[in-house]
Length: 226
Image 1: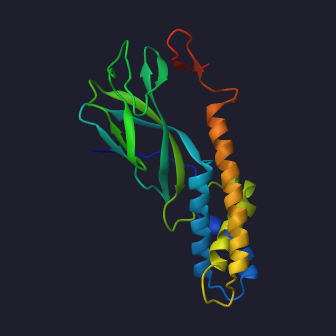
Image 2 (image 1 turned 60 degrees about the vertical axis):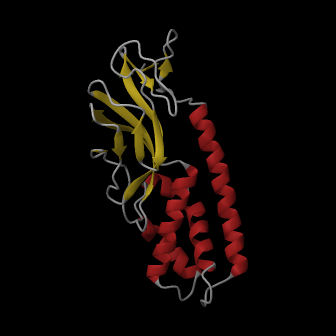
Image 3 (image 1 turned 135 degrees about the vertical axis):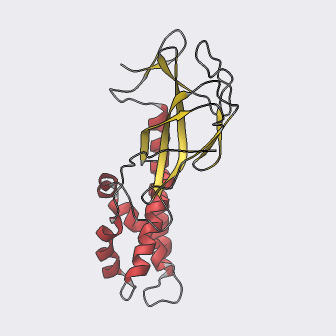
């Protein structure tokens, strides 16, 4: 079993502090530790469902014997999902099929493919014939209890994440700030936004319109850089 190497995930700790004052003002009597916990839960749910926090350049050399790869929890961040796996093949970069079998013309990946039985754990169809540099596109989320999060995403979606934190806090029973009515209202609003972002993320990955996106070689549909 291979442990993936350091990847420099682009998150910063302390995200809860940016939302903390708002929660404390709206939830009189809530302990700071509880407010921080609910913010961390909302950040984790948001990252899991929205699929907006991604890291496309995780590279790892895999060699004979490396049939399982596990991504570590690093600086309060963990892998929520492996989106794509890419290999160098005939001077181009090609997608390695998930739950499929790759047909190689050159190189050492004939018959290779992969699956993800658990989040952040990749199991390959077979052993590698030779050492191969493999690139992974990953969806990330804060580890449990962590408030590490990309600042740009937090700034852009602060209101949505705050709705999630408020929903979780209001639904804590038998507290002076508890409110089932407000908890359900904020939960509904949070869920509605998450469903919208899920659909947007799905469409963006299906119709990638970036100017620097990979393009397909016409003869073998290989992913080549511009």
